[in-house]
Amino acid sequence: MDTTTNDAALDPACEIDEDGEVVVTACSFLVAQADLEREAAEVLPGKFDECTYDKGYIRQPLYACLTCTHPPLKYRQGAIRPGPENQPATDPAGMCYSCSIECHAGHEVIELFTKRQFRCDCGTKRLLLPAEQGACCRLKSARPMLAKLENAANVYNHNFWGMYCSCDKFYAPEDEAGVMIQCYVCNDWYHDSCIGKLPSEDEYEDYVCRACVSKHAVLRYIDSTMLRYGRVEDGRVSQIEPASSASIPDTSTEGSADEPASKRARPSMCRLRPDMSAIDALQPFDLFLADGWKSHVCTCIDCMREIEASRLVFLVEEDEVVEPEDDEALGESLYESAMKRLRTMDHTRAIDAASAYHSLSSSLKDYLRPFAASGKVVKPQDIQAFFELQKSGH
Image 1 (cartoon, helix red, strand yellow):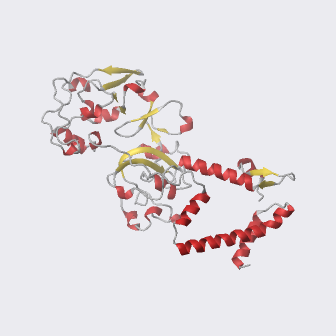
Image 2 (spheres, helix red, strand yellow; image 1 turned 90 degrees about the vertical axis):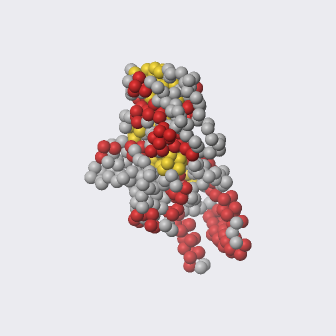
Image 3 (cartoon, one colour; image 1 turned 60 degrees about the horizontal axis):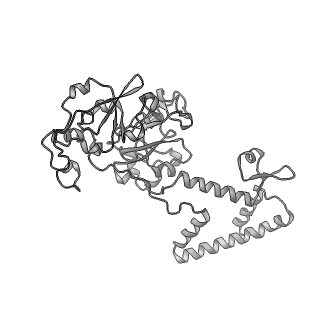
């Protein structure tokens, strides 16, 4: 088949014949196809045939579409394609892994990484496909009523426009010189240069940004010798040694070990630090939490009331990530996937499909045989002519 010279420069399957004509050999095409399938398996390792909407508010990998949603003017300069200044802004929205592939292929999709307590917005009032593509999520097309609904418990921030950190910078992996770490509570990501010098990786398990530290006393006042407080001053991290907790009984394990902490009997004594005013005087500071820090979160009646009201139950219960299901066909070629699909079909339909494929294959071979005998290049119009013949019944 012939193509253009520009295409040949970009497509590894293209070659230049002795007459200077651009052609694609069958061998080079198969090699290029195998490379594409291998790359796709690496980029899309999980199945994408089911939306997570029905799983409710879960912790999952999220994505945003900057084609279907439009940021306010202050965020447009950082976007890959900022759009016209007079374009109306929309509400931010997030979608699951499957919808980012099935519903928004070819769009400007950005990865938001893992966020918790979030329900997929695709197909809801916040995230509808363009009219020419159908208004509802393709994986939930039988439920058009979702287009009138919103996920009221979802929380959005500047990440949904591609902005991160306290510096409000658009995330472009190729431009990032340093490292970024994620706040365990708000799930935003922060540049190491904006935080200050970090402790070594083996000195802490989780990081909590200074905004969350200021907002949530149940974290700020944890009383534990296992906790590392990190305060940033002039680019340096200083340790704030916690008061000894030897006099405070550990009642965090009262009740059944299998019962969620939020449902267990509440300890009567609060385990928060007694020197709260001294800690407050040191703000603002970040937290670098040492391994095992969750066992020191207080679950007394008052603290649990704050934890539940602030949607921080993940501090005392399981916080698993719902990942896309592994794709059993990962690594298979398109041919292998098609043959496996054929074996699962109804026997009669499978025979009909195999017969139709054999007939088409035989006809194509007969049509191409003269080209092979003469060494003539097969051009796009030749293939088009073949299918026109098939449609006409010849």
